[in-house]
Image 1 (cartoon, rainbow, N blue to C red):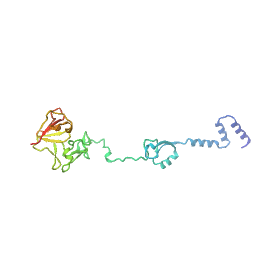
Image 2 (image 1 turned 180 degrees about the vertical axis):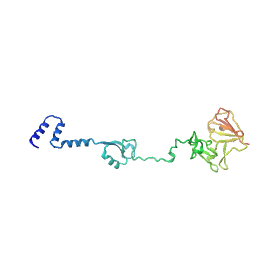
Image 3 (image 1 turned 90 degrees about the vertical axis):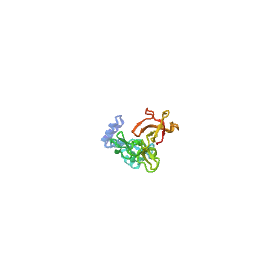
Image 4 (image 1 turned 45 degrees about the vertical axis):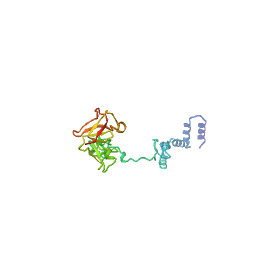
Length: 253
């Protein structure tokens, strides 16, 4: 550096001129300080990316951090529980519950017209296939068990006696649901969804009820919602009014 250039540098640095003027002069003198300053600024202002880092499958171990863009790929390779972006309340290596066929929602656009359009023992209610709630929703001699319509098996058991369709009773010899015998005048639909066949009945004081076990006395033991006269196939409510009543039912002659 010659003496004239050195004198100019000394004069600039000893005065209170802005740093930009000083660096401009240094650049002109070929000292290269401006390029190093610019490089440092570029490094300090390097773009960072949000990453959710987790130390395990528990979401409580996750924190959102900002990492240099060129280190994110390395972080994701080393930490299988980490993922790009803000933490969303789950770990990147959390175990997901597999979806089973039973959990798959039915086609929302499908509309059934009868039970034949439904599968798996479901019944058509309101143009949608649904689980049954009572045996009368099932066709033929099927009974409703655990939400599906099923054929009662041979031999006496818990399915047939309790869940036969209305006006059908279980034949204990075969375990099959059958209509009331020909010598019966009435079939009575009890509130527990069973059927009692009888030749006559006594309503007594027309006592309202919800269940036979809780509301009916021993002399009127059946809580009946309605009864059907088999000769005419006409149904009526005991004592009228559409309310279940406690009845005494006489056996078929």
